[in-house]
Length: 608
Image 1 (cartoon, rainbow, N blue to C red):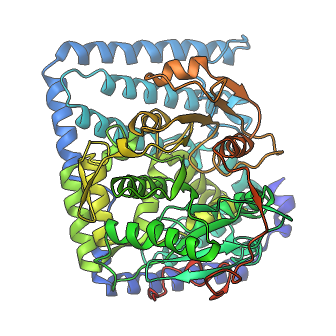
Image 2 (cartoon, helix red, strand yellow):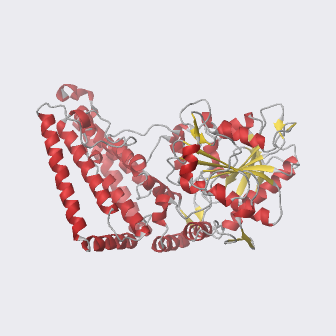
Image 3 (spheres, rainbow, N blue to C red):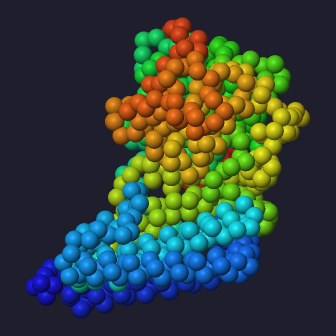
């Protein structure tokens, strides 16, 4: 059949095949020459320090050697597993309807092609892999005497190894790739090689996997497109005031503090725009848009971002609206920064914050999940040395870390799709936003890693020094709405739950379905992800997150309406005339979304 279809494929033309290989060869030579000319790329940085990883595995090996009985039990277990698998495969091959012994997890999408189930050879390959993967994971986990941080590191990198060697990642053991290769006479592999070269060119020699076709998403056109204007700007951020869409608006303005790691428009993505939805509910929304810093502002630190970010925004909102009290929302590290600002204001007796909403944010970093793998002393020191040379952390380095937290979904699925199947990634607004990340100033990221992740000072009473004050989250007595997501790989929900007991005011905790991004950017009416919440708003959250979950009720709808109802109950129910950007105490500087959000990795930092 392949021969009959051959005339339909351009690569059956020898001239076309020669041109394809010539193009690949020329691009490869140019890429190699560029790579060799950039001396810093000869030692491409890794997310973690290799010596620290090797040391952890050396410690693991020592503990395993010290317990030969554990090794013997593990070897016997693996042998028994393979014997049972061979028996199961034999039965299936002679026609007996035997259920597979090993099945991928519910969220594992690597083995969806029918041949993984229907073809006995590929079924056996899949089950052999799953058997060894689970055996290796269990064997490493059960080693006694490991330090908790060492255990976390070896389990994480064992998982990375196991994911990397999956048979789905190799052309000759992936039935979908083999089928595509036969049907296209290898055209998929040629196109995949071109995709690989393009990703290497984008990373100037370092692989930057393209996860989506971002060409259809244009800032200011179909993303970051809610009408508004920039009414304030400083070297750290722009403040956007959105135009009202209702005849009357709620009296208290709403300040949103996004993370400085990515662009703010996760909350202004087309049909899933939280900004547009909030405006339609009658909120006067103000959004911080962080600058994408270059080398010059390397000394900008946490205090600068706090002072020139939420605190400056509160001043500007007061000038623009005349309102003294503001509801504030923070997402991810934006929520961490906002909570620190709230503690500082509480220490000064400043009552401008009327309520606090924290979305997928950590205030207690004692259990940061898999991110803890990257905060040992050796890794942070190595990262600091690299950042000091550049003055900032390149956007791509943190992207690699986040991708490793969900390696099968965010790395290996695209390796198969882009390079082995030779397909172009499809357009997806969330992944397009995710790829549009920002650099971080050296001093800011160093402060964040050392004082929050490593020392957990924000969670300690009077533990963190900010702007000349020792701040204490217990002084924050305003009502708080704390949202976490069940599959969050960046802010684990049980760690986020601790925030309700670090703050002194009445708190409502809500647990949304899905992960760090999709669970938050989840508009009403779609019906995709629901949430869990306490049965009544008056119930104080118990100390144990498990007890909270058992007593919670499930709602098959977005958390957005729940938040809106909650914030209306906090005294924000008085209606006033709509506020038009530029008609208050601050003039319009330029239309939204402003200039900072448009700055790419290749742009110099702007300011003032």
